[in-house]
Each structure stands twice: as structure tokens, then as C-alpha cells.
Length: 245
Ligand code: BTN
Image (cartoon, rainbow, N blue to C red; front, side, top):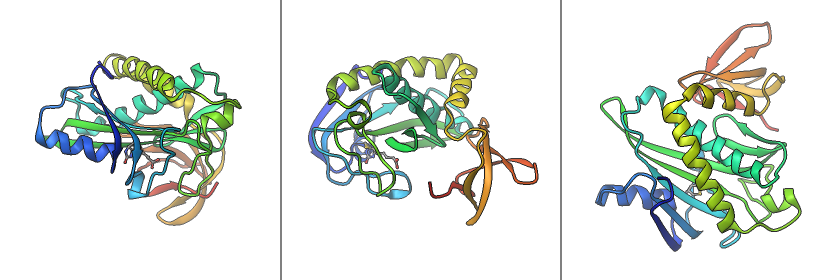
């Protein structure tokens, strides 16, 4: 089960890197959590730095072994993780939590959590996966200078990071079972949680500014958008980005 084994570190460069190093050295069981009080070299999407406040925020990674998952369907890992973070925040009363494609978690327009999933593929399947989560709990949030927030700022009170982690691990386990057993439900929940769905938003397509309307995500994890003029097409992160908020 997710969280039944736990490695706690005072300081580490990056919990994702630590998990990857462990996986090269030894058998790490599915669900093992690697939690660090402080990361000195936390990393996010596109190798951006991920900063958090030691002891105030949550930075951890989970080793996943998604038995036989087809590499073409690896986006289900992003869906399960983002929805679990959303669930855990909703359960403690954070309002308006949405998932910005592919897997940022926002409160209103502000980012509260980032997710970095690193998969090792073998023969067209996911051999194992490292799911890294950075959640701004009691800090002011600091996400690449972007519009950011924290749970404390949203609730107006401090929150025990350990209690939040316990709730989040529970939700990860529940959503994991859903990902294995009832993927249609997971996909429907992701669609409902999709930030900006149905709204015309500034985006960048192949580096050029456009306005587009996110509709949903396809099985490969591409965002289906309506373009001005009415055409609807799916795009991956290699071509499509959200524009400045
Ligand atoms: C992003 O939004 O760009 C993803 C941020 C992911 C940060 C987490 S913190 C725990 C784990 N270790 C890392 O170095 N990164 C992830």
C-alpha cells in the first residue's frame, strides 16, 4: 500500500533523485514514501528549481510499480496523483482546488502543489515510476516566481504537515485503486477538475500566442482544445503551453 514503507530524511538533494538512486541499487517496494524535511536541489517540470520551506511544507516522493501499464497510457499516473492531492486539500476545507493540465494543483489562479513524475520504461511498459509531490503547506509558497499560494494562506490557519501527509497518502491509495480498476471514473473526475475548462485562455502553440479553450484530455494525456475558428485538436506539452496568467 502507498505509505506502508517510509524513509524519512532530514536533508537530501531531491527526493525524486534519491528514489531513482535507490531503485538502481536495490528492490524498492511499491508505495515506499521518501520524505525530506529539506531539499537542497528540489526540481520541477522542465528542470526548474522547486523551493520549499524546511519543516513548513511537504516534499516527498513515492515509488510506484504500475504492473504492466502500457507506456502509451502513462498519463493515468499524472491523473491519479493530481486528483489525490486535490481530494486531500478539499477534505480539509480548501475551496476551489483545480488541476491545471498536466498536473499542477491550483487554488483559484494560484499554484499550491507541483507534481513531477519520472517513469522508467521497458519494452513499451512502465517498469517503475517515481512520483514527486511538493505541497506548499505553511509557507507563503514560492513557485518559480509564479502566482503561488499555500494551504495556510487559503485556510487562514496553520496546518500540521504530518496530518496532511497522512490524509494525502490515504487519497493516493484510493485513487491508485481507481486508476487500476475504474479508469473511466478517474478520467471523468479529472475532466471535472480541469482548470480553465471551457474558458478562452491565452496559450502558446508552437511558440506563437493563441487563444484556445481547453475541453478535456485524451488517453495519451494530450489536451484537447478548441481553437478560434472552431477546430478542435489534441496537443501535447511539446507544442502547447498555457500562456501567462
Ligand atoms: C513542478 O510543478 O514543476 C513539479 C514540482 C515537483 C516538486 C517535488 S518536491 C518532491 C520531489 N522532489 C523533487 O526534486 N521534485 C519533486
